[in-house]
Length: 271
Ligand code: DDH
Image 1 (cartoon, rainbow, N blue to C red):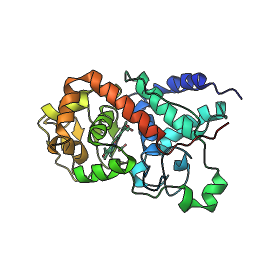
Image 2 (cartoon, rainbow, N blue to C red):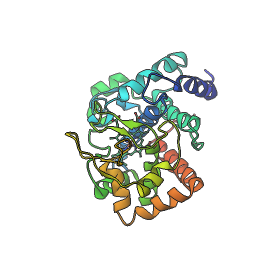
Image 3 (spheres, rainbow, N blue to C red):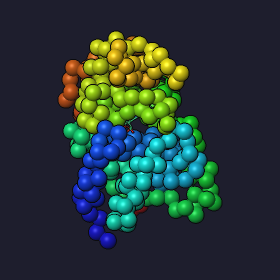
């Protein structure tokens, strides 16, 4: 069957607007799906990553870090049914780049050709084909942890800061991560607002029974401990300052780093 990725792209764009979902767009949760599918990569063992679409299976599907992503996967299911030739691994990663572009973000280079681990293989050899829980970052921690996780994938400090700018999008949900609220005033728009807010707002600890997070004086916007680490760490901070000032540099560096993330561990069968 001809691989008409443009037709899939169109169908993804068509489902993005959803007035009764969060801030009216499925874009943010689809971006998160693409990232969590890819961010399990371990460059030492060459395991994890988007190839295989292993988040369909336990233990990856039930990793606490992936709470809520079952919705993102379900929203894409009708598109998979309509275009059965596309792999889930390609569909999930493509949905992320299509969503970013549709939300005014940069065009992220993307290439198809990922394949899915068949359910029988996942069942027979789960430990071999499905990455273990715990490879995605824990928002309660600090700079060292962020470095451990992203260096493992093969990223450097500047990549880490650029990728974190995806938090211009979406929000935290108490029933998923336990944290609460959006990072920016425009959670359905890709922008460099996250960096400007990080630097310019008088962030303070939120007074509540939930996990430690930071809020602005009006308690409308939020930052995770891992977000604050980007301005508290002297090596991360200059990149926050750069991207706060220079939107073009952010878009360019984000697009390159996100494209690299979606390719981690991807091998394509030669025809
Ligand atoms: Fe994130 N993220 N993220 N994030 N993320 C959450 C939501 C979203 C961390 C923790 C959380 C990246 C990096 C980190 C998006 C994209 C990206 C939530 C809230 C937590 C917690 C989940 C919920 O309650 O629904 C941590 C920690 C890190 C880190 O240490 C660096 C990266 C690299 C990306 C990316 O896409 C490149 C997006 C989008 C969301 C909003 C989801 C939504 O439903 O809205």
